[in-house]
Structure formats: C-alpha cells, structure tokens
Amino acid sequence: MDMRLVPEEEYAANHGLTEQAVRGYCAEGKLPGAVQEGEMWRIPADTPLPDEVKHSPLLVALREQMESKMRGGIYHRTQIDLTYNSNHIEGSRLSKEQTRYIYETNTIGITDEAVSVDDIIETTNHFRCIDFVIEHAEEPLTEEMIKRLHALLKAGTSDADRPWFAVGEYKLLPNEVGGKETTAPEDVPSAMRALLQEYAGKRQVSLEEILNFHYRMEMTHPFQDGNGRVGRLIIFKECLAHHIVPFIITEELKMYYYRGLDRWEEVRGDLLDTCLTAQDRYRAILDYFRITY
Image (cartoon, rainbow, N blue to C red):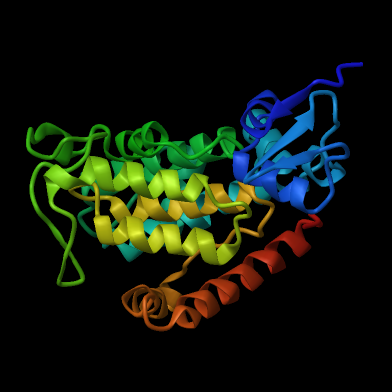
C-alpha cells in the first residue's frame, strides 16, 4: 500500500480530476486520510475515488455512445440539441431538422432556400467540439483547451481565411458584446490567465461559480467571434466535470439568458433561474433515457 500523502494537484492529475473537485471531496470527507494544511490538502496516494466519481452515469453513457457511434441515445440527442440551439442563438439559419440531417447523413439534403456554407461548416465543427468536451470533460480547464475549442469551431470557415480573425487565438481587434465594450486585445491574455487562475483556486465549484466564469469570459470576449458558443460548450464541460446536471439554452430561453448575462452583476438570480429551467428540461431527457444523475 502507498500511504504517502501527496499534494491535491498530484492526486488530481493521477486520477484525471480537477483540483477543485479534489478539494471538494476532501472537504466533504469523501477521501479518507486527507489532511488539510493551510489552504491546501494532502491525500494518501492510494485513497480510492468516491463511488460517484468512479460511476458517472451520464458521462459514461456519453462516452460509450460516442465511441460506438450509437444512434438514438443521449449522445445523439445532445449533439443535435446543443448544436442546433447554440448555433441558432448566434444567427445560424439552419433548422433543427437540417441540423439533424447533417449529423445523421453528413449531407445537407434538399432545401428550397439558399444555405450558408459557413452555417454548415460550423454545424459539423460544433459536433466535433462536443466530442472534444466529452473526451476532456474531467480535465482542468486551461487556455489551451479554450483556444482548441475555438479552433475546432471556426476551422474551414470564411473567417479562417481572414488573417485578422486569428482562429484558435485571442482577438486582434477590439469588439463589443451587446453594445458593451470588452477587454482590449492586448489585455486579453493576462485577463484570461487571471480568470482561469481564480477559477482553479475555487475550493468547490457550484453552478453559480460556473456561470460567473461564463459571464466574465463573455465580458472579456477573448475571440473575434464564436465566444458565446465556446462559452456554452465550457459550461457543459464544467457541469460534467463537477457532477452538475448540464443544460442547453434553447431559442425559447435565449432572451432570458441574454438578460441574465446583462444583469449578472446586479441580480444573479435571473441567469441562475434561466439555467435551472434549462437544467430541468435536460433532466427530463435523462429520465427518458433512464440515466441517473
């Protein structure tokens, strides 16, 4: 038996967990033998993971169905619902049925209206982004991961041909969100590093902490475009990482979502309530597929 007490970051790395998750399990007494030293924890190297970590039914199902390319399950449903809604919020004109058709057949099908090539490319790219999120769900959130999501989302689009757009890199030109000024391009790297460092230091991560990260990243607006979609993918990933039921912001909830972001610093309850409503709807889908949470 290995009874060495290892730092929380080493235990997290050895078990594919975030440091926040490990701190939370220590605080809850779920890692026997863990000892707190100031603000940090040390854990016996051979301490087993809590049962809920070893058996995450939703993440297990998503990964198994992704690997087997299973149709008609929670992975299939999540791919279509999350891709359609997140792209539609940002102006994609593809219908949900067209999104489904692209996912299921890798073709657009017959349509009476002109279809944007970028809408099609970003739809297929978003499917790959979801795969990336599922594959790396339990890994710590990093700048490299966030940039990778942006690169996957925008690869092959007309934006990728524009040198000033910087696919997979932080913005080169100032931009706004909802008519509000955002972080200047030259300040984005330090702002993102500070935000990620602060987030990594959270002892326990709640839905409110995830949404606060989302709000602050959106106000930073680190990329020239695609910030909202990358941000919502991060929300989904972090919910999976911290055993929080994830959710999808639908067209019906879009305006409440935007209002919640706009008012986050004054009234956090608006965005929280919207996301809890979306969470209840995803729970209903999990119930249908008989996946516990």
